[in-house]
Amino acid sequence: MFFENFQAWLPLMIPILALLIPIVAIVSHYLGKAHSDRQRHETIREIARAGQPIPPELLAEAAQDSDWHRARRDAANPNKILVPALINIAVGLGLMGMFSLMMPGAWLWSIGLLPLFIGCALGVYWAFERKQQPQ
Image (cartoon, rainbow, N blue to C red; front, side):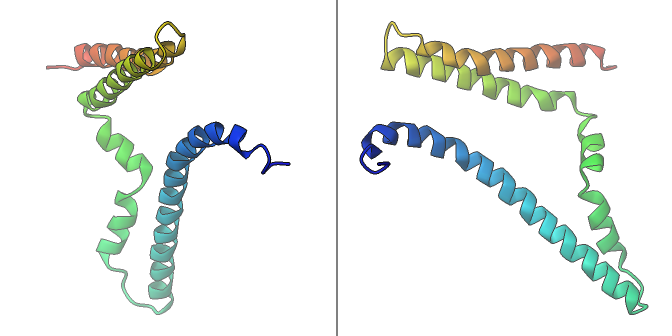
């Protein structure tokens, strides 16, 4: 029954697969990071069991990659939020233009409003943060 209606499901499969690509990339990134962290900790355990001194580079690498340290390091730069703001604004305008050209008179152009407004909100947040930063 599924194969009889395959042609009807085909247009739905393209966006579903397109949405799965970033999900798979994010999951594979975190699985790879967890695997490398697990290997590093296992190496540290084996060195400690053998009674050898643990190289400081190995400990510094484990502490440096943590999300907490990265967040504190990145929090000092208020301009870091400007790039995602501009990207969201550009994607929103691009989607609005693409959908308005694909189907003139349809409501599909409004899909671009979501990233556009997200980008505008990030831009407003960036402006407030920049004004609050001491010169």
